[in-house]
Length: 197
Length: 322
Image 1 (cartoon, rainbow over the protein chains, first blue to last red):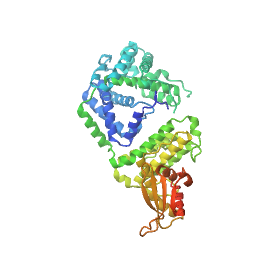
Image 2 (cartoon, one colour; image 1 turned 90 degrees about the vertical axis):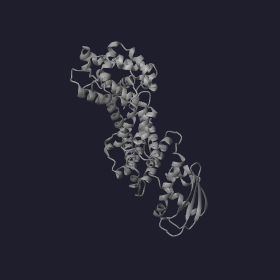
Image 3 (cartoon, each protein chain N blue to C red; image 1 turned 30 degrees about the horizontal axis):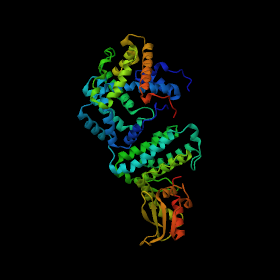
Image 4 (cartoon, chains in turn blue, brown; image 1 turned 60 degrees about the vertical axis):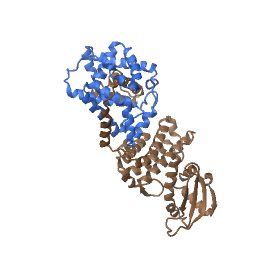
């Protein structure tokens, strides 16, 4: 198993253990820390407030029901919640749109909407925004389409009118550049090399 | 390292769930055996999910109570009484797991306490925990787990989860204790024993690694001593050393308390009074119970009937879980 980069987050470990032990205060703490990220991401993906609220509820109830599925040694809690949120939101989207009905709208401008509501994540968001803005635009387009619209790499290829191999390669290169930029900005989960369990 | 070609071209799409199911399976299978691709996959995934903060937005206030209510309905929160017994155990589980997670492969082969190596120690603890887990009907799905550490942890988590959800009535369920003699006691006592044994084995490993001991809080140590003292009169009988009278046990240091302990569980009637007094630090008494210090090493001060006091301490030293 590859351990999460930059070492395990002790607070994530504490929260996961408390959730396993049925400690409701821990769930409230996780909700207060991460619900803006979960809700905002669900809203961005679905564009539907009711769906975003339902998905937010599902994500936190899933964590509460099965905290042992979250392994703090593999990923940060925030990342894991984002992953679950995206899967739920993408399921919701796929139930609602036909295969070719995804809008080839590039997701760049709306991305910062609402961050000012949340003081805790605002400074992090500003740093991530800078790193995203500095990506070559081809890479940025591919990543944002996949991440915020839930497109597969084949759909990204069609949306951008590029070969599928190119879409895959832009996703990988873009994420590597993003990781490098965030590591340089001091994001410790991206800073150091792998470690074996 | 696997012999399959590295699916590196897919790692970016994989990180954002943008692959077909068959491709996801290919990458997952490959990264299970390929540290290089696993590390890159982890890094790209972490980077991708930082995008999640860009769209952060405060949810409607009413959503908070709605979510917490839905959570409670799906899985009851534990009650305070359960938490008091569960937290000390959870803390020891987390501490031992942290130690194990930091071991290098060659450190797993070090002889530890009475065990051939660290793996054997963890396997032993898994078996002890398993007595309680089995008696509670905790699903044994984790036994297929090849790694001893993960198998132990998965079972401990399942146990914690079962107890947390079960409510105070479950604490009265009779379950098997670990130890030399087969004994069934209420779950509330078995949880104290789980805390005790997990701490002792974590300290075994700390000794091997030349790390300082990390005992439970004084009130939790007092709970461990109290747990053992309930069993002690019967154990003295079982060892053929039962006799009339009591021992006054004075446990000193933080959490210290005084106890009058009968020297037999079989002799009813009015208390005969203390025939001996034993004074020993609480934490050292707990180590004695675990068989980690001998009676002379314990430094126990004995007054009165030294034969009775020695029987008392020697039988106490057999109440560990090895």
